[in-house]
Image (cartoon, rainbow, N blue to C red):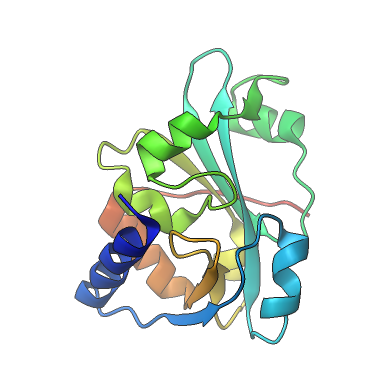
Length: 170
């Protein structure tokens, strides 16, 4: 399914939950660094998203953190109880299968595509408890950025059946 169709599906889902989202269109970007000039005027927290797999148990993890955070995969693996050294970046095929997005488009907003809730979701607690006006993610395409109020984002997650595992990344 094309990203435009998926984005439309996402927007329909958000509307059905009475969630108001603000979107900024920009050129296609593949890194946070490329994206920042297009979104630095926004009020709130910009995210970066990592799609990972647990080497041993073959579990899939989506991690959303504030864009300026460092994520140490070994430390995160220990905190999540999967054992140090066991978290790796998952292959694009797994992300396409589960979240319907490809490289450069990992986003928590794609969790509505994970119908069987097989992707565990790790969320930087600062994103929902840091007093941000909005939190920003790609809306199924890396040619736009979409912002939701933190409470609305939590409502969206609940609707998708994904209970976030809150972590601190200070």
